[in-house]
Structures are given as structure tokens and as C-alpha cells.
Amino acid sequence: MSELEVLFYDERLAVINKPAGLMAHDSKLARGETDFLADRLRLQFDRPIHLVHRLDRATSGCLLLAFDRDTASSLGREVMDQKLRKHYLAVCRGWPEIGFEVDHPLDGGPGKPQKKPAATRFKRLATGELPVASSAFPTSRYALLQCEPLTGRFRQIRRHLKHVSHHLIGDTSHGDGRHNRNFRMQGVHRMLLHAHRLRFVHPSGGQVVDATAPLDAEFTRALSLFGWKPD
Image (cartoon, rainbow, N blue to C red; front, side, top):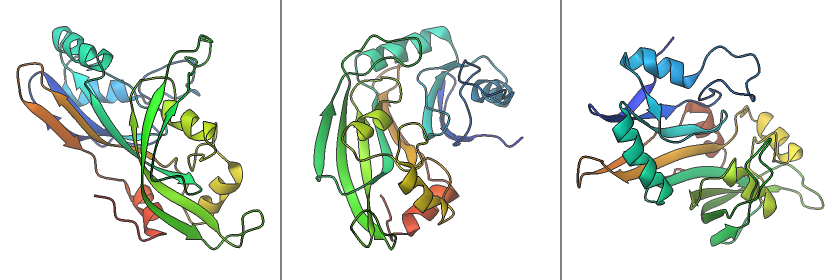
């Protein structure tokens, strides 16, 4: 079992690069898996760990963890106060406007029907086309987005993109199957959502931790279809 890439580390906390396809911990959404991120991290660091936030199974990128309860509580307050800045990269269908914000309440997922405020800020970084017919058009259009969730609801980015009909590519729950197939034909089988950058104030004082997670080979392959090279 290979070790997970560490983007930042000290005695109180770490930021790691979570691979796509790995669940954070055992839950009702597990499909009989026995391999979980939390278990791997406990073995890798040889100490207790506390996940400060979550990433979906299919999402890759920056994930913050603490090694003690006090640090976890302090970082948790940053999350609650919306001081933990998270930037994601995503590929969606269509060409949305250059900058837009989705403010649309969301429920908490299975068994949590109550809707709560949810907002995500989007910035279009690039556009491209694949030579595959779509409806009455000879090509299919796609865009590379920077996504900044301003709240932390269940599958927020994925559901907000569906809400504005710019479905996330590779999302089998909230996406568009026709466009997912277009990418599978090109050898891209993963969901194209990556927690690219994480920025927060270290609990020990004024140090700002700014971590960036490199893309995996399959996400890079998807971008290369259009000649995209994100910063």
C-alpha cells in the first residue's frame, strides 16, 4: 500500500493529497470496501488523526487533518467561520459565464432532508470543444472552472453545477451520462473535481498555510484533450 502524498506537515497538523476513489471512512455509502483514508493515515503517521473536513470518494486533492483534539477544534472553528479557503478545479459541460455564483439551498444528503443555505462561487478558466456531436451541434462544449464553496453542504459543488445545467464531468450521481461517456471514450473515467488549493491560518499563530495539490495522471489527461494548463 503506497503512502499518501504529504503537502504540509508539522507536529499538530498535516495536509495530504487524497487520491480519487478512496472513501474518507466507513459509512452507509461504503460498498463493502475495507480500504479507507482515515485508516491509511493512522498507519502512515503512526498516531491518532482527526479529519477536519471531508472530500467525496471520487474527489481528489487537499485534505486537512489534525493530530490532537485541541488542534482539530481550532481548525473546526475556522471551518465554521468560513475562514478555511478552498479552491477546486472542475470540468463541466457547456460554456458558463466567466464569473458566477450559485446561491441555492441544499439538504444534508441521505436521511437529512432539511435544506440549509448553500453558496458556491465559480470562475471560468478556459473553454474547449470535443469533436462529438451534441444535440443539434457538431461538437460538445466544455469548460474548466475554479470553484470556491462558501458553505460546506453535502456534494455542494456537484449539485450546484447540476442546478445551473453545467453538470460536472464524470459525476455518475448528479452529472450527464452522455457527456460522461464522451470522456470515457477518451480514456478519462474519473470524476473531474479536484481540491486544488487549501489556505488557512495555523492554530499556533499568524502563519498562513497555503497548500496546493498536483493533479493525477487521469485529470491531467482530461485537460490535455483541450490543451489546458491550469496554474
